[in-house]
Image 1: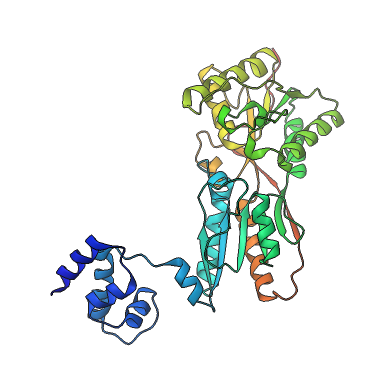
Image 2 (image 1 turned 180 degrees about the horizontal axis):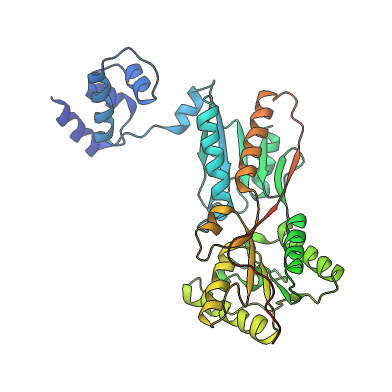
Length: 376
């Protein structure tokens, strides 16, 4: 039986394993394994190419669970929370994950990384079936996951969220960030400075049924919601200015472009045209983009008539037009700090001390902010 017959027959019957690839290629299982895992092995280029080509034709996929059980010398880091944290284009967690993966791949060859994008039951552990050495959590995970991590003595770091008793966390300083934003607008001469928090900008299916504060369910209880709003109120009072915070939930019922646009139009009409705000500090970049487009559609010039600044990271704000002024949440730096902290703990696993790293946010001025317009 020739190789093509073996391949077609095997693909019809069942999932392909490493033994099938080796048999079709006419090599030992160990040789096939070493070639497919990019390990040094004394084979000719012709044999190597044959093994790789056959594995692709047969649709071979490595078994992560089996690899985890066999690679006792390989440290596996699992990233949790992708389903909720990596939702928006340009989300800060995408930047953090990209930094973690590139850093581990380039500098730490003894570590592998997996990223979980799955939805999980609220009361079941989010940890994978295979053995992991450590975990990085994007913003949050459910209590069952934290309990299993701590019960199993698996070191973990949370990025931009709370950790359990034995966990570490890397967070941005949202208090400092809001202080920078308010101070910047005051120095530009703005007196009517609004804050568009998450209660002004989310859509219906993100909302928690029991949430009286009306913030998206993903953000319920998150420190950024309260730190930014409380700091905004405190700084406005300190400058002798009247706070401008929308307190009504916007009428979106589905996450469609039209509903988001209509909600933003309503907010701009009330806050800018009626209440005469000349500057808006926005919770996040997607909300800021909606408000920017709404203002432009209403004939309000940004930044000549209205200045907008948001909390986000550089990548998301640079791709907007005009490019958005923003408070940098230091997402790449959070990813790097989390990876470095976790690797340090793995190298000293007998004595892991939980740590909290707080990174100062910074003001980045682009093209959506300017001096306050002259009063009419």
